[in-house]
Image (cartoon, rainbow, N blue to C red; front, side, top):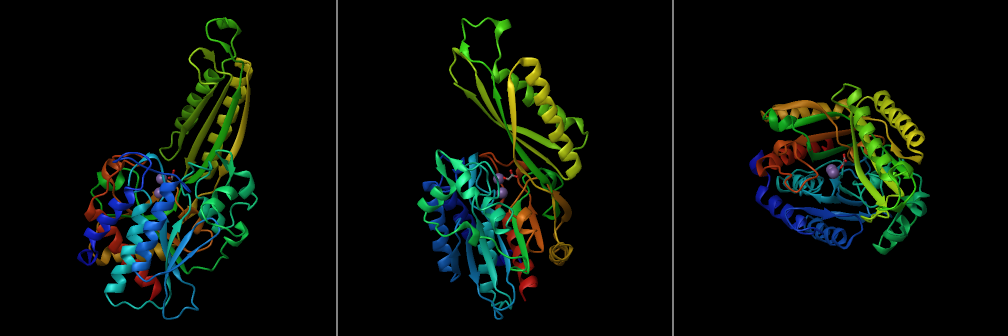
Length: 411
Ligand code: GLV
Ligand code: MN
Ligand code: MN
């Protein structure tokens, strides 16, 4: 079955896609609506046209490529993922699900399979939060999980989301993006695991049963700036030092649950005015908190808020905490988990059920369609780094499992 996947072609396409990057290889940086993102989209569209897929782009740039089925009145099945990449990322996060999804469709086409249901390949806009601060922008809008007014309120580099998308060529009202529940009979996403379990245990496939609940907050600390030489230490209200204590409290809050499934990260720290001889007057943190258990995740958020209040009082600074997102976990549909598992069994692949600690567009697709995910191993579990790596064989196996899963769901 794996032989039927054109692994060499898929690898060439992954390499070409990785070349559309704002950072030098092996790092990949491809922020939504950047020049590189638009060039990557153009490249993808040439591949979609070669496969005779019917392409539609919505108002936020979600791209749908349809292989029409024999019974087009039936809700289609869909697969897909994202092509944007965080700064200094690798080449496999998201792209394996888009180009692997395309190769899965081509493999079915080559085999002479005629789907009853149409099969859509979806490339979601901005799964990564890099530009607009919130992840899964395209799939949130598809699932009506984000207000369309964010078109005017989300900003990046002084431009609103609406201005960015218009400039990128995606017009029309954001309210047109939402798809009603029932639009798809099923959604299946192929993705690298981004964690160590499959690689450590030498397994081929992870069958995802649930996706952990992500939340993020922006924390702005206002202190008092001044001359780094002249402001006496007892007189200081250094915004960065307060932020540093808060970042440590974030770590302590996550470790404090005692559960491996609780994670928290302070991935952004911006210091103003950012001069070596100036006491920081303002600091901005962005904090990411996740857990498969919603109540436990929320208890960590509450602990972080308490730490902010305590630090503010003790250091004589003000701390403002602004929620960015707080999403519930998603359950994969048992019917799809069963199909993926049966495909793995049929082909003698070593597989386990597992949860996804990373979020994916599937988190939101699960709100409007029965959803499943196929994980493949990545070396040492490394992701969001230039040395992210999944072997050609692992990618081919995942693509083959996806192809057979789509065939079972679409026939
Ligand atoms: C997705 O990139 C995530 O941060 O889980
Ligand atoms: Mn990612
Ligand atoms: Mn991803």
